[in-house]
Image (cartoon, rainbow, N blue to C red; front, top):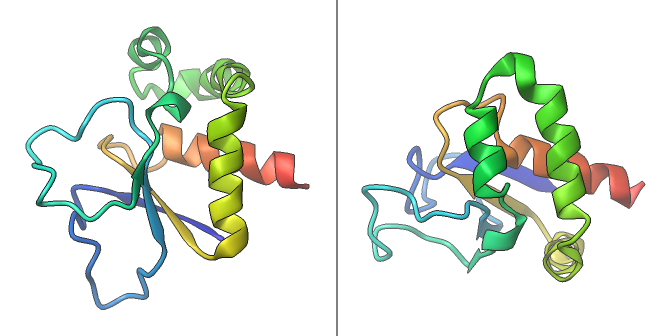
Length: 121
């Protein structure tokens, strides 16, 4: 099972909810304003994040969402080692994708989860 969480909402990974899981930061850039000792992550996988040109082009514009996913999925096809690492963690238990974007509906974590669910079928 893959859960998605904005790192700024719960940097330490502690809450009343069941937030247990292997915590993977999936952004290329470290979250602005958070130090490494302020966050609880188990793994940081930068190469599954969208490329800088793609990220800047998308700019979290909803009308670009479908095209963003199409381009992003093509980039992910080149990340076999990291994708396999994530799938291995998912097979062992819950995984939490951590991301920094403000937009909770249109971001790389949502797209990456969709990509992985499609290849697991």
